[in-house]
Image 1 (spheres, rainbow, N blue to C red):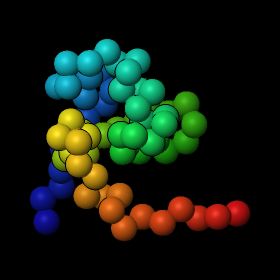
Image 2 (image 1 turned 90 degrees about the vertical axis):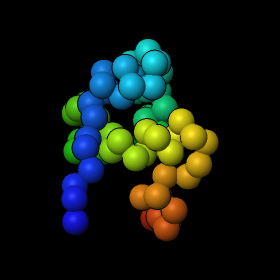
Image 3 (image 1 turned 135 degrees about the vertical axis):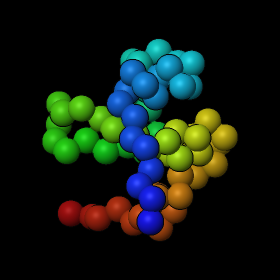
Length: 70
């Protein structure tokens, strides 16, 4: 299995031709799938997640995700 390339916010913004603040807002809202180890830490975004967002399709990593209710 080949690991996908992970982008930081600035790289994702450049690839999408968007402002880094827009990428952060998309990540925080959950519209763009990314990971953040803890609040305030650096976000990382898989290339295929960014591509899915830009293509307007669901991210393949989130298709089978169910929210945990507390």
